[in-house]
Image (cartoon, rainbow, N blue to C red):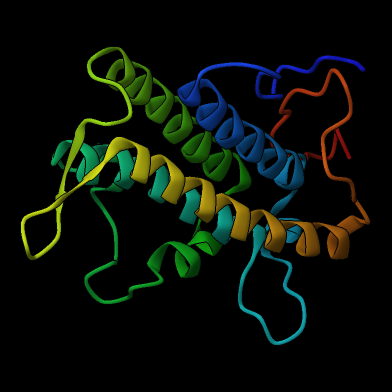
Length: 192
């Protein structure tokens, strides 16, 4: 069996397995949306309004929201200063058409990098059991473990959407990227 950088450990700690599962989903998702032009980012199937560009922006927002607002109680990164959530709860899905593929890839790649840094620091500073800032009406706080599991669930749902959308765009299928794969970014006339 060929080892790949996105595989979780075969035997590791709970944190290593949980973060490894999240990173495998992130990688599979990134593979499913890689090397697209604007038309590929905007493609839809059936009656659905979901696009791969919208999923990129939505998951980027989830990355920053989960480990900044929910975990630390801090405002989201400046990349989100100009947003339309006040008037449109699905703003990240609906506004992705206004972004270039390069902008969407940079937004997602940056949000994932920030999340990885925040989670690595949090694990070193208290582990998965530490309470998050977010609390329920009765005062109970979610743990970092719960937030990571929530993001795993979010990626699981949307990676399935990305599977269907990408197959409709150009036939790309498969559970995992091929061995040696690394993200490329936007498809341009030179890479088409």
